[in-house]
Length: 263
Image (cartoon, rainbow, N blue to C red):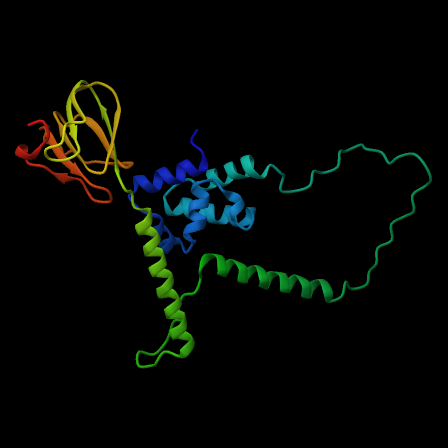
């Protein structure tokens, strides 16, 4: 069975969304989404946050969140949620007679209550900090001027957005990985540009990968599966030969017959 990270990554790539889009939709930071896909769970604050973020991410992708959370519990936590109950029929060790237990009926005092309230507030602040929950307050008047704190917050948000966009640009692929899986013997010609020597020309009977800064494809029949950098390529439904040009980070560009390789 595929692992947790593979299931999340394959579902996201299959739906054609990137990490930035998921971050904006779920309010979970991109570094934690990548940690879930890479199964680097120790980068998250603890198992409780892993289960919460995993459930939110899986539901956003339309996956079975309960199954993935249970798989995480089984494979990465390995501890029961509750202490096992004592076995029935066990006897106390022989020896001196046990003293009866006396329970103190006095009030436990306010110390534990205050301590629990402080811990709850700290956990709430931690969750808000991890999920980036800094949405502007609702109900502001249309004519009201932003305060200094609001302008500072907007500036921070703009800086984060620019940093995220730069990160997404750095993550764009620098080359094209073309994977062709024919259903039967299929004529294939692949080159790296006009005037370049073909990388492959002939009848393809099994899956083969091609990599290059730019690739051009001449496919004799569309009864094959073509994937570019992990994404399915639409070959149409007319049943005619297909010609496509591929570049990193761009959609495949149809090629007229005169511009296809090996023509």
